[in-house]
Length: 213
Figure 1: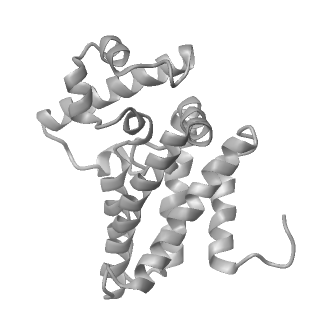
Figure 2: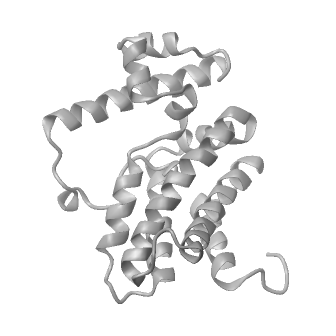
């Protein structure tokens, strides 16, 4: 889930499913490509960074980069979180109110992203604001995340995951999270990102209220 900025699961290591060697190698390669990209962008800027440079820094071929990430924007935005998000949502108690479920999972993800690599979180959200191609790709990526939330919500409620009401409700959370990320970057990354996500979820649950905070 790109806007979460978290590439790791809120689950404790003991609770996470064990991955096979092949999948671990894939994740290691993706992480190397992402790390190379972040370093190069910090050094010389996004536009000046080429896939060839990324491949050289990550010690892989350009074709390997494209095999894992169709575009340069995908390197910046994608992480390993979406499948874990679905797992997290499905693991919650069946009788738990949905607003409580989505709040706990989203806040946990935002907290992990900020605690484990704040510099990466700031870089990714800054690029979302500054680079139109990154922002455009982000919208496409978050649509995929929204469909995963639709699936989890439909399983919980028995509704059609493609139903209008489910899609609107699920995408409202994705949109709120995206706007919290953009707001954080536009305001110089001041304050705690988790607090902004909490405020966004309050708006979605209770509306605007009588006055601005």
